[in-house]
Length: 395
Image 1 (tube, rainbow, N blue to C red):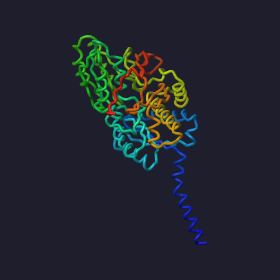
Image 2: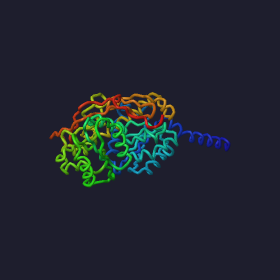
Image 3: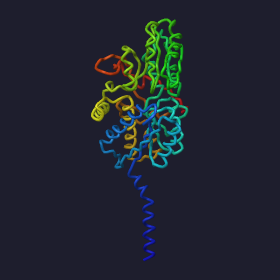
Image 4: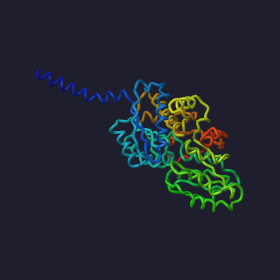
């Protein structure tokens, strides 16, 4: 009797030890590390909303792939690199995440890249944009559905770079701003870049910076443009209050979230290139996103909602290809060169650096009284093959 009890106990203990493994085999665990709070909170919340809707859409409402349940684990990095790094490590080790998505901030993303490599697990970067993420800091576990600084810059250069144009840049003094300007400079071929102005990310008073920009541009011949690359708080478009028109100076910029584009209402005719605006792409995935977002939030999807949706589409497309196998090397084989549908149309992960090649949209701002923001009307779609996006990782 005693022997049988011991045997039963040993058997029970062995079964218990295998329970977590068995459970893990029936689940695909995805960590989302993002700015639920902090300076980029608005971006993070949109990404999360889009990710949830994208997972629902991509799985046909089942939240399963190959019979395995998708479990989403949320982590708030607060926009802090050290915190993001430790949260991703905890997600991979303690939470047994098979792969991760995020973060909102480029600084946080750069801190997280080595963690993915250390744990040999996939990180799909969305929406952090610094070129170095898929450039010199990249490793083979990193894929990015978000656009990078080069895609932003090259598309904006296509939109505003013309012969005889003098251009100055206004950017945040961080990885996002400096990478953006670097890529933009490389893309300007016809016009002339006369000044780069960098200001702290938390700047609220743009007067001094604007005066330096005016001084550099006012005596230039021909068309004069300030290209703005800014994210988060602060409104650099306040510089129009310094009577730029008197000097014949125009503003140009990329797209942004709808609340930030309220400032565009005062800039009708402004041109640039954007990553996404809900009324521009015409495809079934975007129709689904717009419909789902209106149903849930009584509002159109925003910039980063589309990004979260795209990351979900990439993850589920890859997992379907591997029949639910979430091992990193299996996923890497499936994802390199993989095309997948998104609200922007088809994207493709470039094999050399795992950057998603994607369309951008040349726009012109219209002040429509029906909208609280300046409406970016499509001038034309800039296709991936039109943008010579550099491979910066040496591969």
